[in-house]
Length: 345
Image (cartoon, rainbow, N blue to C red; front, top):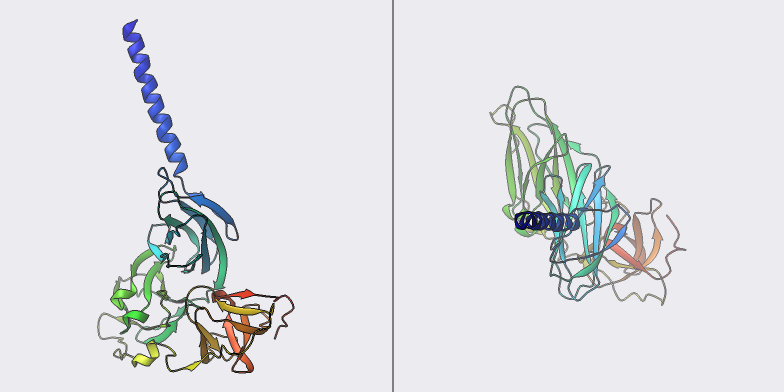
């Protein structure tokens, strides 16, 4: 009988351990979150890094926001299905909300990891931002240049491997404060390689074959636009790009000499106004297009009176130096006041 009691006790201990492990596992499972949804969460000892999962149906920018319900503001990062971090946000002193525009270059499953002190409570929300334009085809031997900014934080390019030749894909920028993050993605949406902006460029050797690829160039989160030069060429001299020529510094650090945004324009109480929503300087453009000239900038903490909205709902027209001719992107601005009656143009 004593032996039987000992065996039952051992079995009970094993059962308790298994139940405890299952309970801990259940509490640390990824939490599904839908785009457009808000959820409350907490960082605990059982779940010290809560993970949220979501599915993206098409390439685009996802806006992740975390509002703290306790004294501390957590950090968070967005990663793809292979765990490669695509974008991250760190707490800023004095900030009451954490916002991140994460450009996701391919449809598929993604995750958000929340990192902070034990006991931190928060509300996390997931919203749709700007839609990424379709990839621009790369031509072997033809160098292309461009820039990405907070209002349009990603640029996509596409190309296919050569069945007869090894290709070299390279990017470059001479400005560490304004270099892009480059990622190479296969046809299944898997990130094959990603290089941080701190390296100011990368080179990938593309094997012979029929595979198709997408190149994602994303903004690193600085206050300046990020400029880049991209080249797809053969490893042999058959089809080479023109040599890389660094742009002058003023092209990488935008608008230190631009006209200052006129914040002396009075905004009537309750009137519709915009300000930066992501903690970066916002470009004010001559037309509701990312290709339009930059007239000035709206600094962090400054507000501008809204006079109209674009017909597609993406841009706000603001009063600039006494004239209603400046446009800012709604993806990087927040509104206040009575904006429902603002006319469209």
